[in-house]
Amino acid sequence: MIKLHSFPGRWGLESLSPFAMKVEVYLKARKLPYETSYGNPRGAPKQKVPWVADADGTIIADSSAILAHFEKKSKTPFDEGMDENARARAHAIKAADRGEPSTSSRSTRRCRRTPAGRR
Image (cartoon, rainbow, N blue to C red; front, side, top):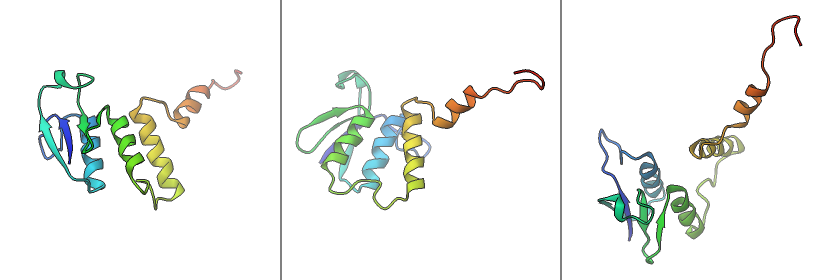
C-alpha cells in the first residue's frame, strides 16, 4: 500500500499543503489504495511534504515527481478521454503550478498600448 506523508487538512480539505492536496486528490481520482501519515517533515527526503513510500519500497519526494512516478506505473494516462481543449487547460494549470507564465500573459506584456499619435 502507498503511504502518503502530508500535513493534516482543515475545513474539509485533504491537506493544508496545496502540493500534498494535489497528490492526495490524484490518488483518490486514480482509486489507488493509500494511507496518510502526518509527522515532522524534517525527516522527509527533502525536508518538506509531500512524500510517498510506494508499495514496492520506492520513496519519492516532490508532488510533480510523485505524480510522474504513478503515471509511469499506470497502464492508461490520467488524461485519457480528454479532448484537446481539456488537455490544453490541464497543461496551463500545470505550467502555473510550476510558476511558468502562460503564453497569453507573455504576449500581453509585449504588446503595450501607446498613446494615440505615438509609435
